[in-house]
Length: 203
Image 1 (tube, rainbow, N blue to C red):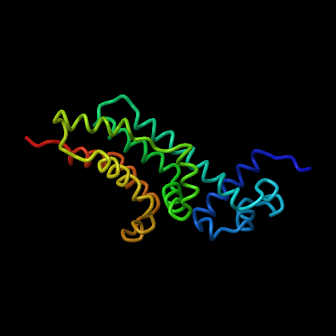
Image 2: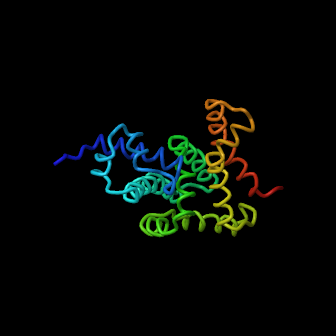
Image 3: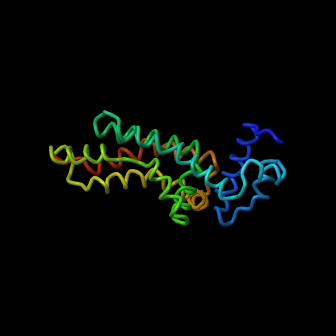
């Protein structure tokens, strides 16, 4: 009997991330994943019986990587503007470390709602504290009247979009990988100031 090895399992998961990211669940093949991991298909099936089980493992890891950190930022006991700045900075930095995540998660949630229902029930973003904080700041007159959910969606969208549209942005502007990363790094400061400026009352 073959003994499982953590390094082999990790190599399989990393290979699967690349293949699923490029082809999605429907287009990926176990042989492609085995080739990407540098192992034979029989060994791949020993670790993961089928493509669905492997996809489930990759999807679970994606959620486990990103959701707890999002919730930590949502729940931080800091002033609203500091929270917006911290969120844009840390969330963009997180996505720069895992650039495949936004497109992968959004694509597969749309393509396979049952996966989303399962994982969003177990672990999901919970912006309730942030939404309450926004409502409170509106009531105090510290920020302009705004739908709290719309504000959170705007903040998330401004952070996520460049990662989903990376290929298009790079092609339109003719950016190298390094130039694109510099652009992303700039957005860690640009996005929060854009959002804060939009909700700050004028004299």
